[in-house]
Length: 511
Image 1 (cartoon, rainbow, N blue to C red):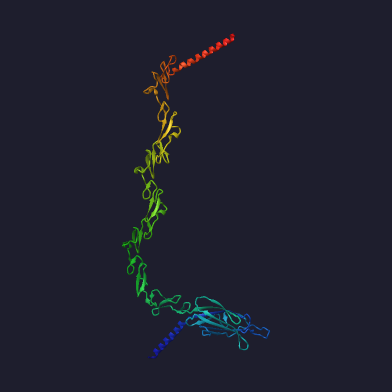
Image 2 (cartoon, helix red, strand yellow):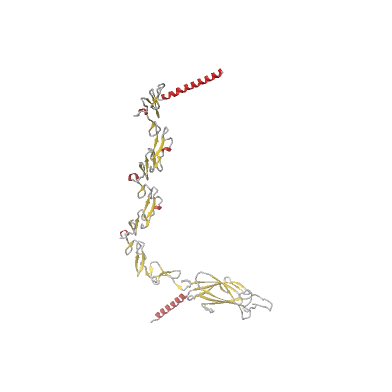
């Protein structure tokens, strides 16, 4: 083998080693030092930092910091070891600002290896003396989580010996092309036929560019552009496009419309009419159903316009409704009148005449009858059934005239007339003189009057009917001639009495 071959192998191995070292890199920890406080001006053993005698307190402390970071526990500085070259002269409290010692603040600590999850941090602070050794003053330790979540975490560290305080803020950031919160996922976007055609999502996963597929996105995607029609879904099956058709289409490319209306079982229910459309169908429902497939019953009883007419009661049924009609009406919607007069169901009594009206009937009653809800008619009265008798004898003016006595009867009345009168209302005079047996006897002369008569008797007869033979024939020849002797006798007797009185008076005077 020539030298060129070995050189190529060596170049490849060096490049691979560099690549692996780069791939192992995760991210970097950043620590920002905020404030250090030595509240008592003493070192760890409790003595003053710079005493000038037993009872005299000297200057403030002179802190010097050392930062060490280890990727595991137990101390050490295998990741970072920084020793401050200078000194914070005569300061018990330090606000660090943009510098921590001589380096920029925050301090970056590179993590060129897979993320272990935590980093162990140790900060030692000594009091710088003019003569060595320097006095230990504060020790701070912390285990910092390595989470790339863009969150800055504040911590206050406390030295165990003297409770000195150190305030820090820390966060973890991935290197470019490293992803996820641990920064252990490596992804570099590519766009060539050798390495593939993809980008990287927020978790470092490869996302094939449009038109490419496969694990490395090196295979052309047969679904770009999609050969599938009518909204079908294209899937890459072994490098071949496969079309998943939406409902209503078929064919290798979903190019053929399915006529659902020709199926054995129509998609439209309840006798609806099916109309095929491109990729679907339409159901024309009857009035009693609704829904895409006419599957839902319409409650006609809840419609704004009542389906039952003339106060009919609506009852919903599946696919229709029933109307309970009031008496006198019929039909599916109570729209038809029942002719009670024609079908013999009327109840007109006592010879009343049935008259049909819409939804009912009335009875025209014979005179003398009335009924429920009676009303004046062309006859005398009208009522529902002509079932109530009219008491004519209680009406005014009286039905029986001229002193006749009224008796109510079913459907009418009867008048008992005084002697000499007749007629339904006792309104007619009886001409007794024309009777077959005249009232005046013994050839007396009859004279008619309203409600009676008189007889003119022949001489020798008297009495109302000339039925009494008179004892004398002196006087009138009328029917009352029998009363004349009585009228003559009375003056004669009176005259006799007067004569006796005169005689008695004369005798008394002669004495």
